[in-house]
Image (cartoon, rainbow, N blue to C red; front, side, top):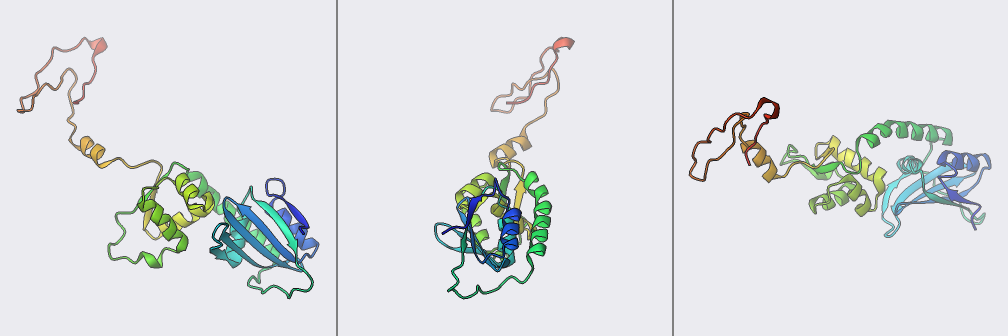
Length: 241
């Protein structure tokens, strides 16, 4: 039986924690956000453990304080609080930081990441960094979430928005994971798709034409023939095709 439920649209995570802290509740706070499940355990109003997992598979993605800080970033999640039966033993404590400091640190991290979230849009393009050392060990720089995203990138899913959707991780967790791999030099993020090889080659060989000239050379390589100068008011540059 739930003692409290709602959405973080109407009641922020900070407010939810404050209510459970003041009332000294013991139980489990469950949140669902974009295919990811968050769980926060409270004992007599104190947060003692937290975890994040994929809803469909139950695969654990984060635990402890890191999981709580990530849950604090959710703005539209649904939540339910289930009181702990008295007959059950106390929850194992993995978080020793008090609730006040947890909230303050969570808010600090949100402020710090807002600039990154604004700079990287859904249309931003992710690619493997060609300067990453060939003999580098990505295994030391990539966690399970990173390998999941790398698999999608190698399959051709390279826009941030598509990665967030197809991975099931949501935009914030996707951005956090991508940023970690950018920091170690494995990936690069660009505001738009890089030019194709064919377009890059065309840009490199396209000749520059002077005003009043057009290219009339045939396949044998004849020199371009001059045209009569255009009237000044209508003069324009011509480019090779």
